[in-house]
Image 1: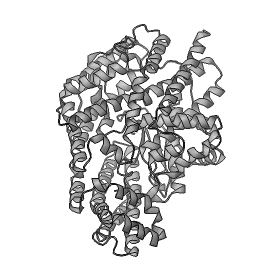
Image 2: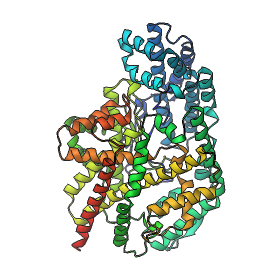
Image 3: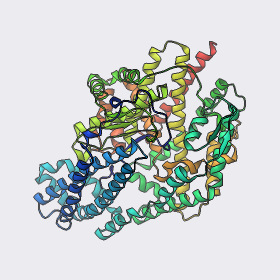
Image 4: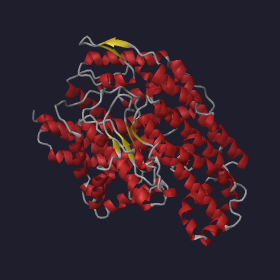
Length: 620
């Protein structure tokens, strides 16, 4: 399957569990997405799904005859692209239909049918890579030269040829494709156990309210203004994960072993090299991120000291990192949020801002929370002939405005890529995806600080940005640090129990939070947090959030300073989609993520924000 489509159909801002929400009073049809832009109804979806299934035998006819002649090669590649594009549209509709009401059995059914189609697609196209490899670079280049219409496939074909040492023969690739339906057990059981079957504890808060601390309640009450309640929530929640430490250890170990086996089968030295090679990302990017973060932990520790000061806490604990630094009755209805976002992206030029303005009025979004709707936020941009879709759970606070800007950064990335690229090179990997979203967040902060009417407002925006840097850069780098260590152990054939995983994670958690230095005390019960992170079931995924915010900070800073060519270089990345390797695209635009410079820019930005906060506090 297409290398980027296989990773995910969505760009996620939050991987949170489905929660029960009260419906927002403004949740009208105008603020819900229009799925009829994809298919008029489910009957139309069924008809297109049938058409897709009819294409699979046609694709199979190309097996063994892929390049009998130039015309045949063109026909087969065009069919392959059409199959992928059709499946992307079908999958988008199925996922959005399910997510708007997760309690609707019809949604579950259509999503399962979509998954089955995806497996059949993989099986019907599994011959493609081995047969292109048999052609070799010389013959492939001759075909490309003779048939100019094949030019759109040049990058993908050369990428397949680059992967020759890691691609099996036709029989081997068919075997691996066949196993795709049977190798997701660890992730599936994790999802079911953590979201549906965990016997969550019940606690009584200081106000007398009894609350079941499931994942949604944990996210809500960990930010309580009452410190005793926060500790109660943490102890109950992580205590329950501790009880299941052994079981989650078995699940994660199975996932790690699967990744190690696939790396070995495909002739990679280890799991990390295998994961990075999918997008041709140098190992130096990952290692530089981790080493630079470790070397600059004093910046994070400065933030924790500032947080303790603003919260009025002398002995900051792990359960003190989520309460907002500033409280206030600041409300931002969706229409205001959209206008703030539109005003903030003016540095990207009139064409960008005008296209975004038009799109925000065309029902691409499902805006408000409601019962049984999926929680969190994401953007899906692979329905090439339609438009991106955004799921939000907007609740009129500044965090909602920030998420709005983040997701529209993704949506405009897809809009521009789809506009400037043929389908086969439009979709892009996470490595560049998060740059588009984090850059827009920097623009939003810059705009909000310019229009803020009080120091309390400024503190709200600065505090939100500071917490975003902690959560999106330092926390994700910490996860990357952990992943690198545990994968390496399993690659070497070592065993890992739940207890051992907690020991490894705990050591890293304590180092990052300054436990030894007395910055934040980490209770041993909280070291089971690794079991809670769903991203670990997608190998070496989260590091890209950290690298992206580093690159995004540099690009935004250059654009805001109106440095010559900065805006065009940045927009060039968005328009390029997946037409080149992501590391190369970013480097060509002036940011080398294998060097310390972009990470140093993050630390500089974080220190600057803290300087501004401390300047405001000094006046009080």
